[in-house]
Image (cartoon, rainbow, N blue to C red; front, top):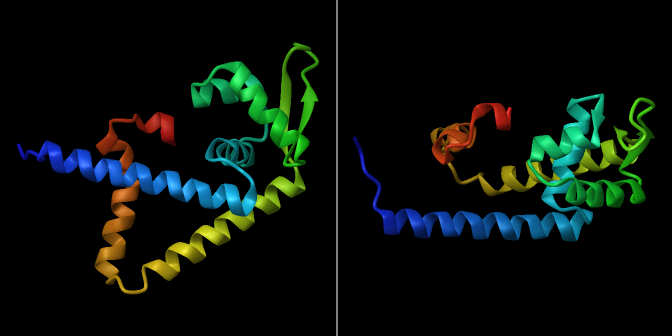
Length: 148
């Protein structure tokens, strides 16, 4: 079994977390959205019938946190809410045209940023990067069901 030096791993993971933190700041500055909000919009795009409780369960966050995020997204015009006729305390969420356009803009921005930053990498290095991204959930011990 191969071992990883703990000090190096700790430092490298700190750099990864710091990088993700600063990358999120770019989204906040450019689009006014946090990762959690972008995730909710992505989830709505992939799942046509979603309740607020579904998102709370999916993200494993308390309802009050999700409700606050959903309220902000609805106020911004990124999604619409439709009251559940069977449970009036709950709402179905739908991605709006603005939400869809914003997701497209985010994806294009991300693609352009990454494409520009890998121009000096070899094809093997790019494939290695993509493979690592695809296996990150395994390395971090997050179940595939949670991320797929």
